[in-house]
Image (cartoon, rainbow over all chains, first blue to last red; front, side, top):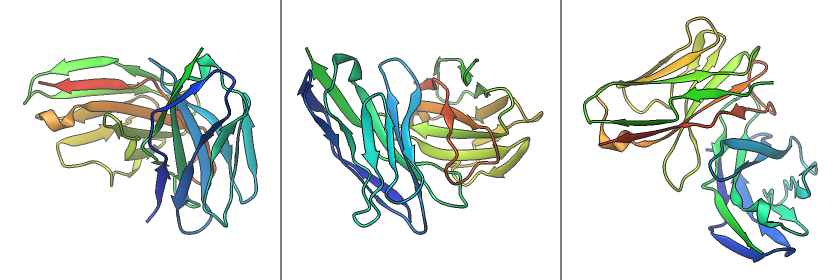
Length: 112
Length: 116
């Protein structure tokens, strides 16, 4: 079946540090991959997505590249800010389906 | 424009009571989804509507859970005879077209349900 595995949190970084949050997946066919973010007290917001192998999604300084050979979609940001503190969820949908399969989420805390 | 809205935002109820959770999707969105999120976990799929038709209810945990979308817009998720294990965040999402593949789902703020 389809599944998503994220690195355990919490991740604590100092402001301007480099961020990587690992996400790997298991899926048949050709999934689309997403990163969603949940800021404190708010709902889930789409951060970025990629729909085919080697695509790179990017938004607000965050990037993730769809790597089919390693079944990964790691989230990166070169210089984090305090305002990036949130919970980040990796998710996939598979072609012909509509259910999102989410990872367990990774909490990021950025210290000033 | 307005996003997905859900009400109530918080619901505390006693075991055995029925609860109804409401979702108002983005105007014009054809597809509507319900998810449940336990503390420390990612959202898990419950059910999916295309217009008013419930296309998939495979994620509903048991027959105490039901959902409807009678006019293809607002949806209600109903939990009958609530149990403490039903306590969770219930999230609604909508998407523009028929769902599937790479389509983005837009999530509401969720309803946090606590069953005492």
